[in-house]
Image 1 (cartoon, helix red, strand yellow):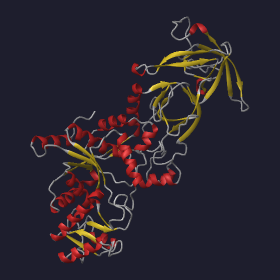
Image 2 (cartoon, one colour; image 1 turned 120 degrees about the horizontal axis):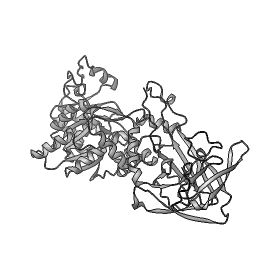
Image 3 (cartoon, helix red, strand yellow; image 1 turned 180 degrees about the vertical axis):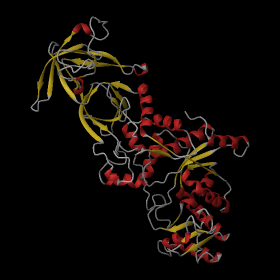
Image 4 (spheres, one colour; image 1 turned 30 degrees about the vertical axis):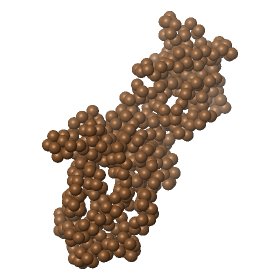
Length: 545
């Protein structure tokens, strides 16, 4: 587990030297889509570091681009982070600082460090140059302070069309760091904003807004992924030259990348719009809402993130690694109940038809605190189709066959004697007998059964829809179009049963005996339960060569 990393070393030194008496961190999502597993590293680490050192943790929405943002995503992100159990101390919006950002932009204009530019977006890109050649100065770069101030005021008041003018920082068009070549600070964008409505028609760019937001909130350690490393000089430049009192420090770490998963917001939106998945919370996606619906415990994600640590470099991780942390957590925390997802009925011919009994069975032998339940048993039960073959194929077969005796877990020995077929020639019903002397817990040991299989009492069983999810992507070649890489068999629906008299809460995780871990879906009703498979009992993952 992670307990030491380079960022902790920086924080501890800052506290020891008195540079800071208290630290403050933040997670700043843009509300233009929902969060995914890759964001979990930033959320969890910002939260844990703030708590471990007695600091504060802010959730701040970087809502500076209203064309792509939506209040629906604001609420969804809040819900995701709360579910992840990373509880923010303060909730802020970048849009709450628009007036202050506007004033700080005017500070740059007054100092001759910003100017209004009339170049088109294409011309600005062309003038910027590339990694091997310097940029060219805009013909509007040397406008006077008064002219720039007047034009910026008119931009704010809506005197110009969208894209007609921008405000740019005046830094160095020959800088080897392209980000420093007179970046855009403000653009004109008439669009309804979820928070400020129609109050503004100019909006700050992320690179300008973000450091000012951090400084306003007193963030001490601004943690971000490595893609922003080249932006750090610009971050520091804006904090310095807008004369912010608080000076945050940007620190970069390696982004958490998950192999062969769809994480791009544009790609996910296309999958949703095309009906390939059932929404942003589809359990086949690694959005946090999708993981929640699949039944992934938030603490398993915490343990996964901590185990990976907080490296300076980027690396790719297989999703199956998370599965191991899910199993490790649920094996002691989940109640274990019986379920049959591909049922065959077994009629026990020598058990009285009008009789039923309750057999005590623990919920989880590894966690006695979960208690026990009364397992119903009668003359008719369901077993898994995979647990029966008419003829025993070999010595390794430890399930039910004709003439073979097995134990029904927590109940009795039964022996299959004959079968009935349906119109398609498949086994529909098994007729068996039981031995009343073999009741579980009786101490009977005169003979050994050919294995132990689980069952569900047919007379009290609750019908359930069982959704089995596999990898959404069947092809790891990301040079191919996304639609050609989709696994068309990534979702299978089974109609089965779970044992009766079990209280089921939505989103509650269970271990289905011998089958895997499942979670009760939001689609569940009183008449029909719906479960999503969270993870199989054992990993079937094999690394591709």
